[in-house]
Amino acid sequence: MGELPVIYFSFKNVAGLYYQEALARLLNNIAKLYNTFSFLQDSTILSISERQKFVFNFEFCSQNPGNIFQKDILLTAQRIATSFLYDLGFLLYKEYGRKIIILLDEYDV
Image 1 (spheres, one colour):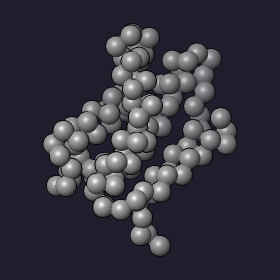
Image 2 (cartoon, rainbow, N blue to C red):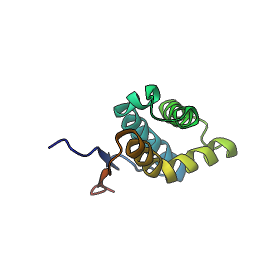
Image 3 (cartoon, rainbow, N blue to C red):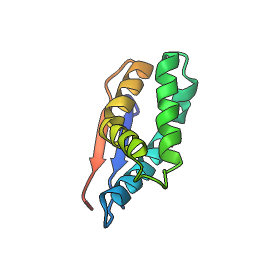
């Protein structure tokens, strides 16, 4: 037990009447996930640019942009939402030097 890093992500509460509302809720869940791995921002193995990207994504999702209808904010939110699992998995793989297990809970979606 405990031999491989695990990413567990739930899509619970990712819903809304509008696309932007659902996306904002997804960002909230991503922020919680990034918080779980916040130690990566202090990694001595990751490059400065990798740590900066992690911090940017974490802060962007944590602030849960209220004005997600603005084009530039919406595009950033979409970029993060479509790449966060790959990005986080890559960083954990690099940090630990082993494969990553990703568990997705999409039952409620």
